[in-house]
Image: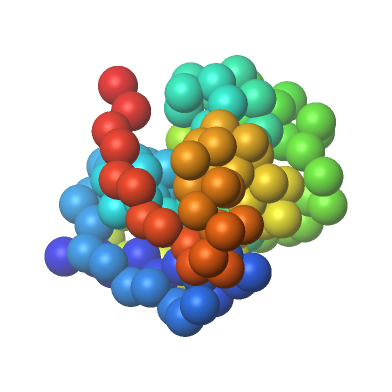
Length: 132
């Protein structure tokens, strides 16, 4: 079973490694565990708020489609390892993901209760939810 590791960032105090199923998107993996990946459009490739950097395992992902490429053109700080979390499907290789600042900000905008908790306590609260 492939693993997805989300690297430590301003919200995650440490790296978080989780099991994933092949065919699951990076966004699904994150959402099911409350990992802060934004998704203003609900994961239908309608925005760029789930923009992540695939630090390891990039070549195991299916090639990017035109729709994803068009959306990524709207993202901030796009790099060679950029993908949209809603489009990047886990294959049979482990992935290491760095969540972009754009995505962290979008996540907090979409989850005011998490932002409020963070502002009041300094602690990030994991709130799992399912897209579909």
